[in-house]
Length: 268
Image 1 (cartoon, helix red, strand yellow):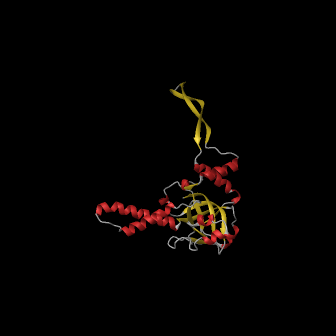
Image 2 (cartoon, rainbow, N blue to C red):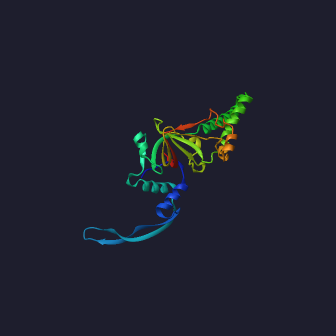
Image 3 (cartoon, helix red, strand yellow):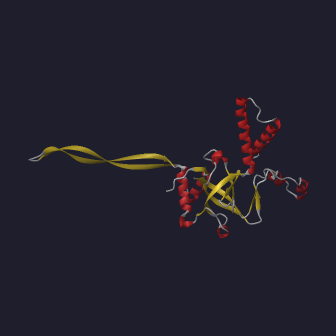
């Protein structure tokens, strides 16, 4: 059994998979444990040369019934073990062209990667921290760390995080050589740690949603995607400004060959 520290775990997906595997899902079960105890009894021994007390045992059985909570880690182990049957879940620390070609849509795989959030989110997070640091240090120094222009710029970048993507938090998982990047979207409710602790190399169990071939690309956090979608006919699309693109400073394009995946769990 592997012991894992979960940084992210999609329990809804786990329950869906367990329901498909077992035909049902439950969070609590009753367990009965039997214990055998031995009661000591006194026995007088009489021997010509030696006298003393001996002990004789009397066994008694005791049963204890408990209601136990099925942990998320236990549910994950069951799903992982099921998927690992017949060596169906492949593990990759690095990937080559042949392995990329063999993997198909809806395949599960486990990867050892380094995650990063989208450029927009990283910039927004950095702006928030810089603004907070300036507020903390100013009373001690009595100096204005940021002029009004800088404060306005930082506040603007910090508000970028308020523009939410309906798909979730965009994240890129990179192998050590940064080839065959993996794009995924994380549900904020599934984090098991604070997002600023989401660093370092991790293992990820995920399901392939689709593959991006060489020449294809995907842009993370495309802010005008919703506006473009609202244009339902050619006439409306012609009226849209041609420069409706993310500013270069936050533009984040992932180019194929790459993966778009559904993350089940991220752990160390």
